[in-house]
Image (cartoon, rainbow, N blue to C red; front, top):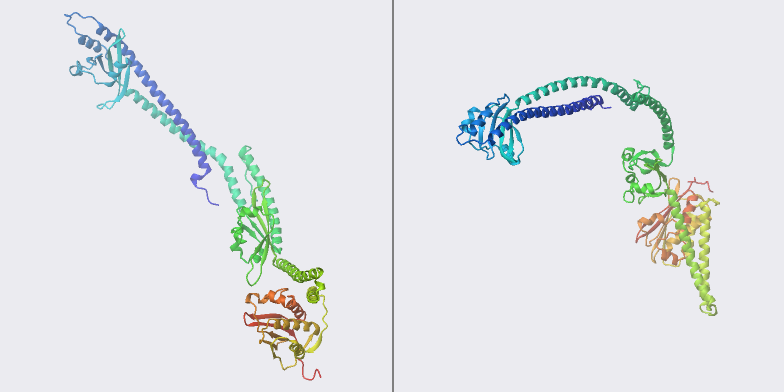
Amino acid sequence: MQKVGFFRSIHVKFVLIYVMLILIAMEIIGLYFARELEEKLKTNFTTSITDRMSLIEFSVREEMIKKRAPDDPLTLEASLQGVLSGFPSEDINEIRVINAGKIILATSALDKQQSLVGQRSTDDIVRKSLASKTPQDIIYLDRKTRNRILARATPFTHDGEVIGTLYLEADIEKVFTQIDEVNQILAGGVAVSLTITIILGILIAQTMTRPISDMRRQAQAMAKGNFSRKVRVYGNDELGQLAIAFNHLTNQLQESQSSTEGERRKLASVLENMTDGVIATDRKGRVSLINDSALLMLRLTRDLVLNRPITSILGLEQEYAFEDLIQIKDSIALDFSTNEQPYILRANFSVTQRETGFVNGLIVVLHDNTEQEKIDMERREFVSNVSHELRTPLTTMRSYLEALADGAWKNEEIAPSFLHVTQTETERMIRLVNDLLKLSRMDSRDYDLNKEWVEFNYFFNSIIERFEFSKSQEVQFVRLLSTTELFVEIDTDKMTQVLDNIISNALKYSPDGGNVRFGVTTSDDFIKVMISDDGLGIPQANVTRIFDRFYRADRARSRAMGGTGLGLAIAREMIMAHGGEVWAESEEGKGTTIFFTLPFEFQEDGEWD
């Protein structure tokens, strides 16, 4: 497991949080204390100035409302100057008396008397105090001394009318100096407090992080499969109880792992020995488990399957999404057939979910259904073909019999032909039923072969001569038989039926003037028989199907010639019963050749004398 970084450590986080909380609390207290102290000192200073200004204001008002004789040598400006000079103060820099017209009448600054007295005041607070009849004050920075100055303008009235204002400038820098000294003391106290806080925070954090670190190390050991370690219990608080619960959890996990491992081995053994394929997915539909049977069925390797979507593995991505497969109740046929070989799987789906209904994944069981599907398809096709083959003659017979029942039997010209057609269709159905009975006995292996040793060239030639004698069309027979005696052990009746069916088909599909060729050769312990015609031939894709039951290359023509479509199927079953094989080769427009083999034994001269 990756090592935890210093600043990501919970120990450091505890200390930082503790220090930050203390720091924030002290900052809030310090800011509140500094602000309140500043306001208090400024208020005290302003109150002190205001109290002293009240005395000056009274004296100035008396001088301004005093009636003076024209010959009085003491002017208003001189009397006001005398009043201001009687109130010296260390913190008051200057006092001015300004009338309602904003004219400076007197100032306490001796060096400014000549330049200010009689001049109009431009100070904004003077204008505001005269206009509002209320005191106005501001604090500004002196450009020369760089000290903060309190400027205050206090209007005074007589009979409700503003007759002037007192403008005062006082040095308030001492107040801010005191505030700075207090802030420095407060900052030092904060630094000392933080140092103590950090030390205490580290010690307190260790009491919480030590058991957590122990549990972390135990969790890492558990992740590696080591359940033997135990977490130390440091106390009976919440962390101590957590450590006890963690140790209990370790024991439970150890037991669960042992049980799970046993079940996993059982499951793995079951999955590996199952003939059906099993695939498990996660909740997103990705393959998480697959057994060897499923890999063989899908013809894939494990690394190409794991963590891939199940819809892609099964070739269903175009038709279904994973959410659709969860809802499917019935099985799905997976067709992996090729032109050369059919291959069909059947997939059954089962959803794995929690008690709350949350879907954990999907279980897919695969079964090779190729043979079953093939059997079902052949059964359906067989039933359809039998129904069709029986319906055709029955329909014909019904039509003719209805005509006879309606009075056609009285007509001596058409009644015999109607009865002949009915008889022909009846014989056709009888042949069909007999052929089906033969195939049924062969399918159930319910047949007895009365084998005897015969010389095959003589036997084959006798059947050819019978067809040659009875043929009604201009077809030439070409014999390519072996000159060597070939003795085979066969059931002559059944082999006669085989040759009759094959030769009959060759004659049916051979045009007038064509050739039917017969040949016999030997290969190892088998004889190979060939019967070839010059007929229309069969498409290459359908050559292997001519031995299927009811298959016809040209259905209309075959039915018109009275065939049942079972002749070659019966021939194949009989040849296979004799231990041989049968196949066909054909080319459209050039004809078809039927081959079959039979086992034989080469005999020494004189053995059959």
